[in-house]
Length: 193
Image 1: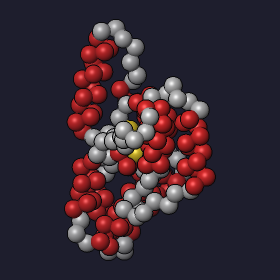
Image 2: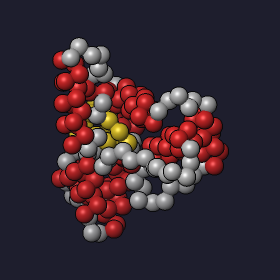
Image 3: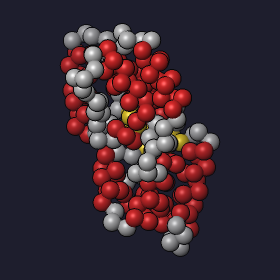
């Protein structure tokens, strides 16, 4: 992954915004971002490419493929994503396969394609999806109000392997919550390339 360039004004704005809402926990904040993301994702046609198809479109992007079908698929996906009709989501299995690519050049091109076609959106990790489905079932059967399950499975690339928050006893709990939410904002915007 390339280093992320921080915009000091955005970092400052994020800290100030979160200081103004100390009553919002990190879990509530993450859920609100996840639900907003779900609304955007669910408005589009979702395409899931497995490793084979990411390699196919990568080779087309690198002009390594003579396959007209591969070039046509890549052009179509790029056009549909650019127009806001489609999004090509990844999961942790695709991410792990990307990290296994030993050739730095092809890994960079694949990562750039994932950035472009996924717009930084991924499924939450499989164990988290299973736990979410079980919790959703239990809560819904107990008569509790629950979000639609399809709203709870999306996240951003930085969290493809799960959500982690910084934690330090050097800060009081309120300031630690501000740091966690500002850090989350920063990581939410990170792409591969």
